[in-house]
Image 1 (cartoon, each protein chain N blue to C red):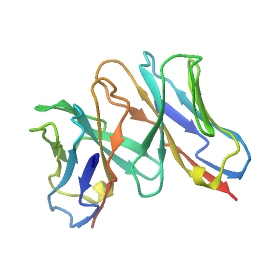
Image 2 (tube, rainbow over the protein chains, first blue to last red):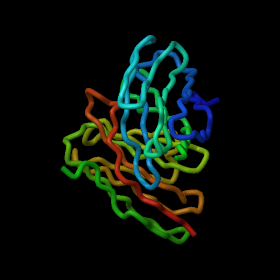
Image 3 (cartoon, rainbow over the protein chains, first blue to last red):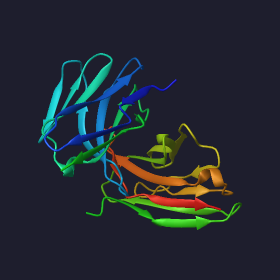
Image 4 (cartoon, chains in turn orange, blue):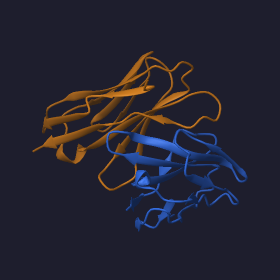
Length: 110
Length: 113
């Protein structure tokens, strides 16, 4: 059973059409939830860290939120340059490394 | 700063060959890790290290070896390449005080024929 599930797998938006990506997790003892962006042919790039339910972080057109069982990445008025794969990851206790979801592939069409 | 440097960028191997993927970071990060990324499977952890001389297995360690003799370097060795190891490999590093804030290399695309 996957510990981190992202939905949808792929999302196609028109430029300016706001939407949300979902990341749900089944683990307990969460020590942080992380969002990354990955462009084709490149390594993932860190976006946000969320630690507790109710927390929100914003960067340009992106806003990440966290509840007890899921996180949302809201994209407001997206532009074509927001097209990428967005990865969610969780960290558990101690020195355990991140566990990644499979990602949502976002395409924003002009 | 160069960040996390991976070499080579592309590699083609024959089944049974061995090779080493190189990873170096110049940020004095304590944590380093190797992931593989396959279509529909996401990023899966192969091995990781929390400091020089300390390594541990991740989710998919079979067929791979690692060592961490210095803080800067974390090579990944394929002992006897198999077609199932065809993948894109990413090395990542982070500070021990922010283990979830990973800095990734640009990846190595490996094909095993």
